[in-house]
Image (cartoon, rainbow, N blue to C red; front, side):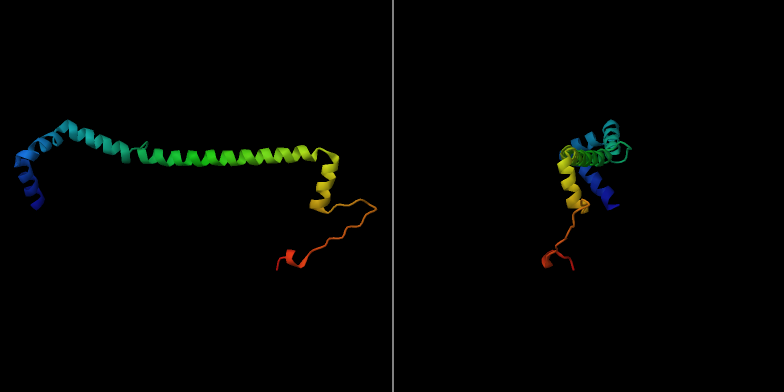
Length: 114
């Protein structure tokens, strides 16, 4: 009841009467409610669009990262097309050897995980 009395007092005040008459206009009220509804409650609201835009930015960043990785891998594949590079890769990564060779793997004490 105090709030209603306060609003009536403000409405009777000459300085605020223009503001109240403008805001209480039915078209302005409908416009305000429509704007509020569109910003926060609609399925295509501003909040949903903001989340979707953030997701699009994240996906663009992922695309750029994976494109760089693809370029690096393609360069590696081009390198491995050379038979000498392919042999070097197989020896280093998979410890492959020729039939007349022996491989000794030397591990240093600081390189062994505990």
